[in-house]
Length: 364
Image (cartoon, rainbow, N blue to C red; front, side):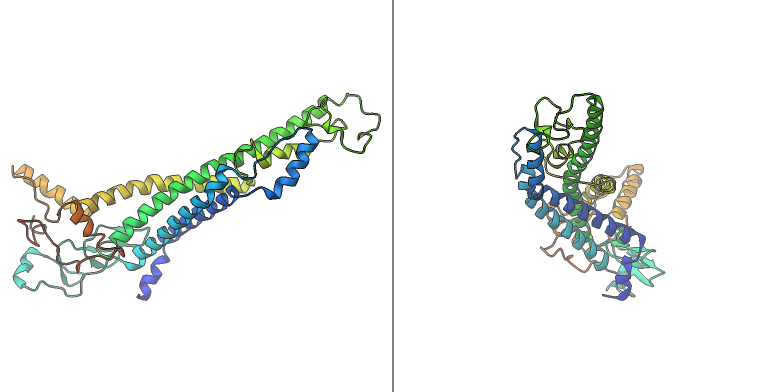
């Protein structure tokens, strides 16, 4: 691989894209790790709080979320790895280039072709010059700043698979991050409200009669277990921190333990917004790319076809016959030729439908 191809990553598009992939992956894996927590680290504290509260409560060691988290994690890691792999293949593999000083074997066919003065060569059918890349690209679709390269003949399949894995992966990330942020945010406010409620009750019962033994019962244990007192406030005036933390650790008993600091909440909320944005924006781009693959066309050729049909409609002529539409299955094979997604052909000569020639598109 040439050195200048490796340097394509040193651009704002690839750097931002890699940061988005990395941040979504790290936050999702972190939240899934908390989903899978068996709560063993909190059992002693929770049991202590339950005993002090005077009420027995069974806390499940495993939840539905902890059971499905390994499978969700496996699927997400596969999608995240596929996204990174196809992204690097699309960026570093490149769309290919028209050979230098290319000309058709039959020089009479040059009358149907355009000559590129910048490349000093004729442009084959479906090839166009990219000013950002400085070369003629076979089957050029568009120049993508996010991969800092063109999308064309050799990397079209990798680009489409990158979009697909990114959209599905971010959909899974949204499924993980949205409830995690909710649980983290809900429990933080619940504990805060519980603390305020406990302080209020402590103030409201400050005139209650104290036990004769002082701040504890006769056996030396806290009198919080007495049923005549609120569970969140010790009659001796001490706040039951363990009872207030029980909901923080367990919630209603069916949700996973998700403990997020203030910065953790903010970061996860921001990353959740990124994931939703990728699903919407990249999903729309994926739709147009899949439509182009099914029709065996490109964005540039769609513009040429629209212009040709407009001219023919003004002249009261039948619509232009697009020469590369071979049927849905054959069109897919022109992009996804094999499991390795290598592009078929040389990018210069293309199979065309019956009644068309190699230069039908260039003479529209």
